[in-house]
Image 1 (cartoon, rainbow over the protein chains, first blue to last red):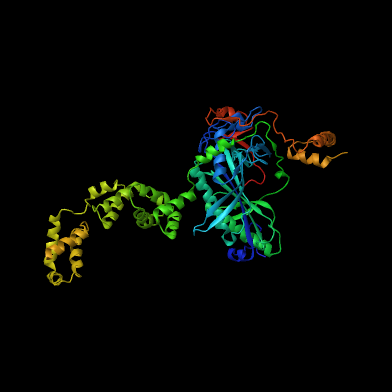
Image 2: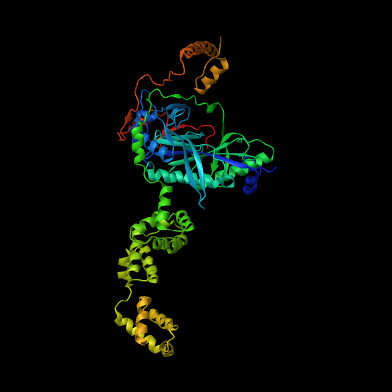
Length: 504
Length: 98
């Protein structure tokens, strides 16, 4: 049997694996809340501060320090719970999760155990082709983040011959909400897609709720991916592995795929999957064993004696519910209706990340169809060519709105509009300014136009004869010549009118 | 009746990073037995309609405004570090860490 570097039998091809096994996923997502201060003390929390400049006796776990709950963090947790269709606990409490690790200075993490603030919810997750998969939410609970360890290798380190870690406690005590799904079944071969779409949907919700910046690359949102296989959807759940800290959408998808292939290989060989935590490797999308579950996993939870229970009044919960913003899925449905796009068009818009751009362009005065035409056509082409995201193009929805108004008012035509686009993208200013600076305005004074028409008529007397004889077909050749002579700046409709008048 | 074994005492001590001698393990097994027995007697009178209590005060919802207060000066923070480097605590590497 061939083995990989991680001691796993050769992988089973994914398509083959999902033909013979039913994957079941479970996802734990941690989100760092965007409060100004930490969960249990008033130290400021912000990304990128100098190490250990955002600590207090509470976040350092100094003797005698007493925590006090950040009310805003509780409100954010309730917002998240409500957005995920959860029930909000009438009363809940914090608990100590005891373990020894240098990034947890108190020797316990303050978390919630048997009484989470939110429970029994669901999220309908939309896949790229429009299929909706319901993910049941088991619970969402409040807790605090740990500090950040940086490992330093022995050879370069100051401690001779030793490997050691450097710890920054700025992140220790930053409010977190952990959202735990029930086993996600029924996804079949699409399990990786469902996992990815779920985490992406959560990220979108955190942003619209304004509870977190939810930037994956900063670790604001982190996912642990559980996966198990069973022979058929009717079989009992198999043994699962938990792949920790999968921190991008793509990685979530890859981690699921890899574990499906890896576990299928073990089961095919008659082996048993070991229940363990695993590490994800960004460079090749593989996973490798982490700590084996052992005594160290006995966290000896008990109720936190230094904090009183949190009992959100029903009035407060309803007040928060009433101020929830429109959630991403509802917004997509509303815009779909308002814009009248076909289903496939709408999906393309969403998948291209053009929803916000088109909405803003419509707000700037363009019709939905015109806004879609620009962003999904010419601009999408240029973004692809430059290998950037649509939103990162050096042009704003307001500028596209202005450009479209120039076209609608007949001051420029579609062809010229592309030149204006070039100017805006090149940093020459707003469309009006580009038109003025480049002298692109459609020629509306008939004088120079008539000169060009007369020249074209004189050059092609045979066509003039045909048109006079009642055959308007060849008139296009004259119009083409005029447009060429005016470098495309003439209004073709007006040219046609004048040509026919002239020929009379 | 002894309900707490020596093994259990040793295991809990290991989890709590407390280094116990053999005679201490014996003594604590006995003492913990007394505590467990006492709790067992409380359990006899605690009917299901008595809610579990995690806190003696009749208080809920003690919240703090989300307003930053000054943090500890870094020099003070690092003064309690066994060793420090680049403004951070230097600690032995933990086994199994990547």
